[in-house]
Length: 256
Figure 1: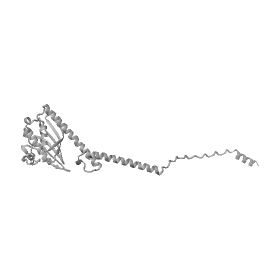
Figure 2 (figure 1 turned 90 degrees about the horizontal axis):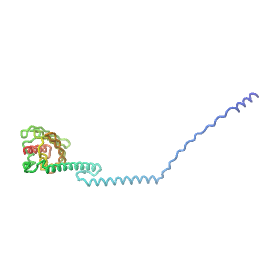
Figure 3 (figure 1 turned 135 degrees about the vertical axis):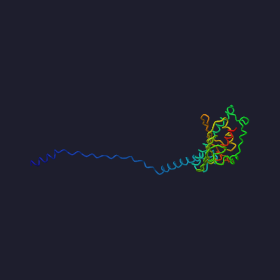
């Protein structure tokens, strides 16, 4: 009986186990499902915006194309139109710089700093005939460099429709690069009064239009950098012809 009473006491006096708390799971907010009508509305809106963007782009491209000569746009795609516009703007900038240079030269002429009248500068003696450069016995080849008893050297190279020639004599150092109908001409020579005006007049007579001109000088030397355009009726078709013509022009200028 004593054992039973002890067993009952131990059972009654033992501490009760703590109740286990259950963790509540957080409920995720459910997004309201879009109905088919809303999805279709958004899709149609995107399509309308894209169509409007393309329409505006085409209008801008057509307006840009109408401002350029047809020769600058070979095809009607976006890349060709933008590329042609870039080339056209570059040529306009060159023409602007050339006109500004001509304006400065005319102002200088009016001020009396440079005399270019036919009576005073002997421009009549600079009558240019393109045939004289094509058949001149003194300039059969740039590699000879023996025209008029002068020493010189030259070379002609062709790469991707690019022709180049150079002529170095006691009169001038001439470098010519011809790409299609454009000429990059560099001339290094002794500075003489009125020679630039005379050279430009001679270029115009040979149907070489001056698009851009840059001039740098050091003491008695001057360096001219021309960007010329070969007109359709110009008879100088190669870098060799241009180099011979330019050398002959400056030879005549030195004699005048």
